[in-house]
Image (cartoon, rainbow, N blue to C red; front, side, top):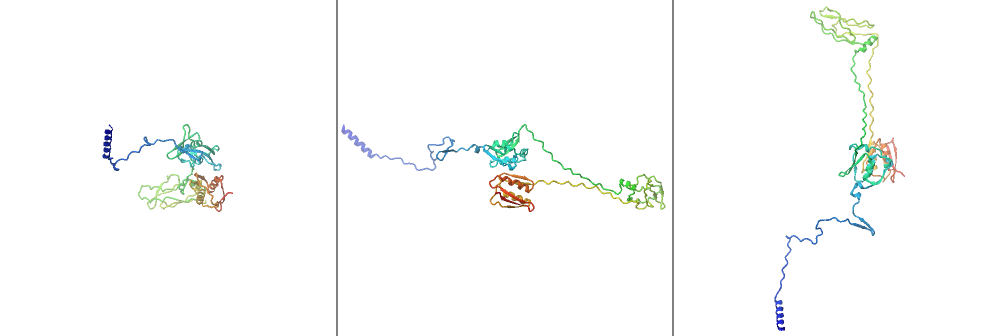
Length: 380
């Protein structure tokens, strides 16, 4: 029994020594094959939004990374402004002051009838606005009759009239009537001169030349044209002249204190009628109407955002032919909202500089109208 077990163990040992196990060779890297998918997959269903993380500032401060409501909705940003009282603003000036750096702009005054709202003076109760949202601030400035209309594409704010309200009647423009008088041509013979002739004024009237004599027997030549002084019809008889022509005598004038002298023959080219013993009179033409004085339009002075106070004033002075001496070196303020003034150059200067009386470094302005010069210094 032991012998058989030993023999079997020896045969198994010899078989294991003679048998060589060979492993299969690994295939080389093939670039044409697709790479294997990474496992495990972090995005089996796509990107899934998770809760916004919290950033730690310091030891005890945790700050959320979510945007606040004023950043997500610009109309929800908080407004807290104090409009200067010396600015004397209207509603449009207050709206531009509120929307400064808010990202929105105000629609022009020519849009619809919104200029009626823009030109209203700002109530004293609205010089202090906030803290409140921009949405509520714009509605408070407009009042109950106007509704805020926001164009988010252009980020522009405008106003429309609410239903139930009626626009006021616009004033009609006053037209200036200019009288025009046309002068009619005056002739030397007028009916009024007949009365002057009766009073003894000397007027010389040239008669129309007499047509040539007609030698045909039995025919009557046309009567010569008489002046305006002769008004009675001609019924005098016709008699032949010595040369064969027909002579027609002038009618006898009406009995009057004046004397009318005529030529001896009708064949002469002209007949002179003279009324003597009186000085000559002259009729003066009617006076021309006085011209209507034109009222000059007021000048407009504007300062656009992006410029500075000094640049705007020097530009105005150049237009008005004035000189500016700016002695406030290093003192200047940017124009952040559009400004508009009416009147002369002096009126514009006297209105723009008081807007900065509440600044940390205000101005003092002296002027000389004779020399057309203004001097700007810092008010101590």
